Length: 116
Image (tube, rainbow, N blue to C red):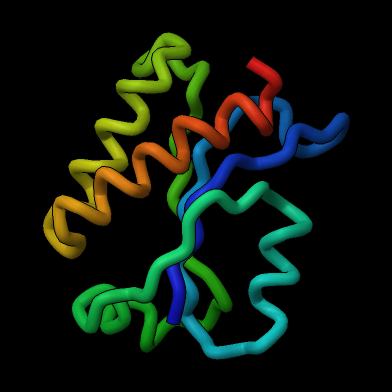
């Protein structure tokens, strides 16, 4: 199962805040990536570790989503703070080299999604 990293697309009705989104697959449905691509721009995908997959095994949902709202008071629109929080959250399950690759891909992708 996969983990998808990217930024949510802003929409007039539903998504009005810039958001780093991390989706963990809970099922092996072949249409998962198509579903996610409608909601966000994906900039990095990796395989889940066995430990991460255990958490979703008993879920009744296709995905578990974690969000970091970039313009939230906690982050004050500082992308580096957002990326650092994501880095720390993944550090227990992901090797340092891959963490750096994720951070760089997301840093480059931010400009593409939000035209900054």
